[in-house]
Amino acid sequence: MSVTTAPFLAAFRPAANPSIVQAQAPGGAPRAHVIVFGNEKGGSGKSTAAMHIAVALLREGARVGVIDVDARQGTLTRYVENRRTWANAKGLATPLPDHRAVLPSTLSVRSDIEADERQRLDAAFADLLPTCDYLVADTPGSDTFLSRHAHTYADTLVTPLNDSFVDLDLLARVDPETLKVVRPSIYAETVWKQRQLRAMSGGRPVDWLVMRNRLSAIAARNKRDMGTVLESLAKRIGYRLAAGLAERVIYRELFLKGLTLLDLREEKTGIAMTMSHVAARQEVRDLLAALNLPLRVEVEQKTDAEPTDQSSPSDPADESADAG
Ligand SMILES: Nc1ncnc2c1ncn2[C@@H]1O[C@H](COP(=O)(O)OP(=O)(O)OP(=O)(O)O)[C@@H](O)[C@H]1O
Ligand SMILES: [Mg+2]
Image (cartoon, rainbow, N blue to C red; front, top):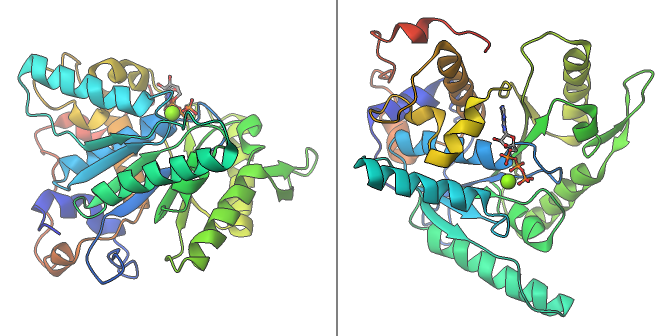
């Protein structure tokens, strides 16, 4: 694993969890830490959050791979392509992840399909695990074999969730009167099964985070109730709750250029940095910190040095944020 630069420490040090150890392949060789974005509910923000976390890690000097397990839809693939095209057109040295896309099998017999998809997904992971520090996998918003198999690779599983009881329904059934959790629901069961499979194959336990997405700026009752239920559900089905991302138009605008909020400081992006963008960027950084990703061994040894904050004190926007 490579030694990273000081800014890496600034992003990770506050939340670095010394109990999380560097992932190792059988035989002891270091391998990438795998972060899977998953939720059987479509449109919850998996691809958007996956790209933001991948770029946040790249911008901290890490070697990052991304695997599009939803290559038929191809949002993450397109995001990376758009980024490459934009960087080339503008002559920018925009950091790019190492990218693989895994399409669904075209075979017709179920057992053949599963063998084919398993082989191709395993090949993508085998390619990138030894050469990357972090691997980010984006999965489809439905229950497919590819998605389930990708979940078994997760060292960290991130489930973005729109702030709606419609989306929460895939995690748990909730009593409408008392808001008490009646029972876990299908996606929680899927995660439970994949956790079991992983444990049986000798893998380390997965660290599961649920992150709220598209939070409204208004303190509405739904928002408060969702918070209450998600907190009580966390203990029951075994996830950590991350603060998440607010609803902001900028996420939709960045896609065509392949950019993320972490890129907006760079010249020639053509997007003026507003207070809302600064607040949004901070949310992404907070999410990254909440992931508690393992530091690489070399980095950990260097943490006695003063951490260097990447934010420039001359950026007045960093001092405040709006909700926009
Ligand atoms: N915080 C946010 N604020 C505003 N729009 C957002 C936010 N997060 C995601 N979006 C938008 O919501 C839509 C769905 O997001 P995205 O494609 O990331 O979801 P997904 O979970 O990957 O969907 P699918 O299950 O179809 O793969 C996109 O138009 C995206 O730009
Ligand atoms: Mg997607």
